[in-house]
Length: 149
Image (cartoon, rainbow, N blue to C red; front, side, top):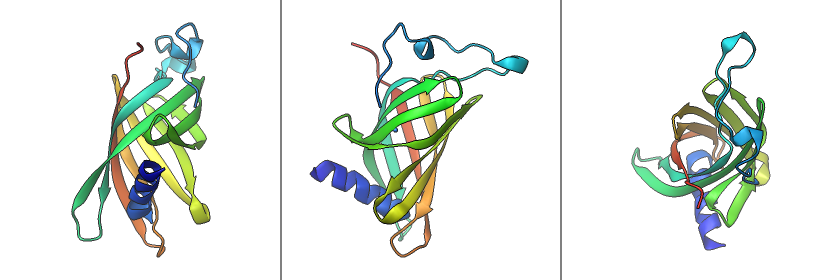
């Protein structure tokens, strides 16, 4: 509980990803061109890395990040948190080409928006949302795909 509170606090400071697909799941198979030849990123699976939270004084604090994503065509569902056992559900998840977007709602109806890019087995990008005092905060997420055991 303390870890999720710390991660949540990290998101709160910054601004005041559920089920993993089985290997046979089509969403887990290599990306295939969509209509018009656009390549869809295959992002189903587990991802682990860091959330770099920008503090008010300009310094950055690294927090652990763990995403569990399930992609069905262009729709993304799943959760995110500091580790696999402590997760918050995501909503409005979309995959368009190499771009992955979704939101997580924090307490008090504050919504954190994730805007990520797929780079091989890595997802990187920015998060933004309101802090407790209403000011806009930013953070950077960098996670790598966790290999199946």
